[in-house]
Image (cartoon, rainbow, N blue to C red; front, side, top):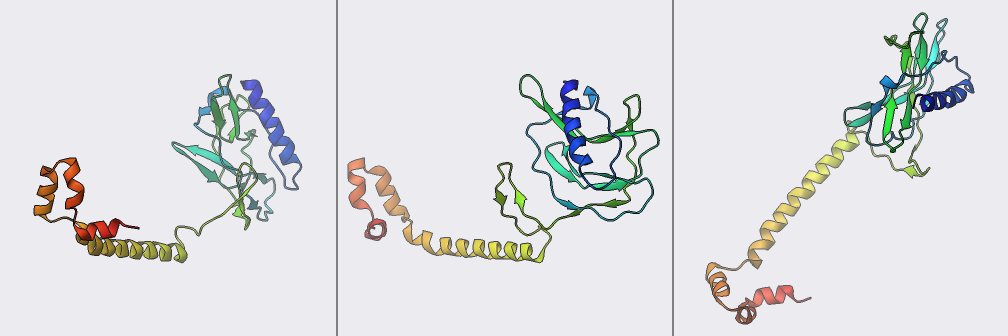
Length: 207
């Protein structure tokens, strides 16, 4: 499995090296860094890389991080590499049975141990682009939950719910049977029940 991790990281490094921003020196993950996950992460998010003039700073691409039951996006960032450390990019691998594992991006010392993540100098900003599904199709994006538009939608849905409750209160009593008719239907045989239905219900059920 360690070989698979090395291949995935090599591909990530090749992609990163094609960029115009300075990137860190890379290394691989130990197998102990792998965590089992139930499903793959979503497509990567497009981000705008902010300007950065700090000497020695490198850019770390954003990544999806598994948090207990869901994927959470960790924004790309400018950092100054820890002394003597290399960066192991995040990667996913499958074992022989198809079980999926993920290793989160981390800084590692020469002996493979994890090094504390340096504080970001600046973080990537979401790009104004459409979200794309794994099949390459554009996915409609709704307004953020904190936006005024979302609050308007909540109020509209609440009003619709109240209207439905009022409609139910007005319609259902007119279709209900009184106690005497109900007792009569329960005591009657199946062949006798249909003729005893109130005329109002028969009319209401006719298309």
